[in-house]
Image (cartoon, rainbow, N blue to C red; front, side, top):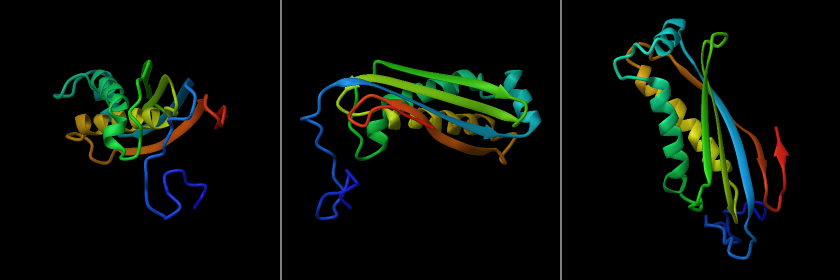
Length: 157
């Protein structure tokens, strides 16, 4: 269990003490997708759903989620994010919407969870806004694509 930083020697979950770590520039990028019927994708593209502009609302939901990650995931440290970007693209081949989110900070711990949370909540918001016409949508492939900074350095999928 010594490799699991959120588990103490006694096996109890704990928040990691990062006080001795130096502040470094941190970056992370995550992606995900939601598959749907072609008619649903058309309704999103045409902005014809009764709940409003799906892509705009989902983008804001993703940014808000990144900012509140520590409130949603019990052992995450609250971080002063310097930037969060959320990009959505319609993909006819899925058919559906692809989401990419990135987060930056200068701090003692990384922003991987913030990027993943942004993608996840963005996708859940799309589902919520379009479920009236398509309950068979599938949220899929939420992945960390890259991270940089910190003791472990850079990582790329």
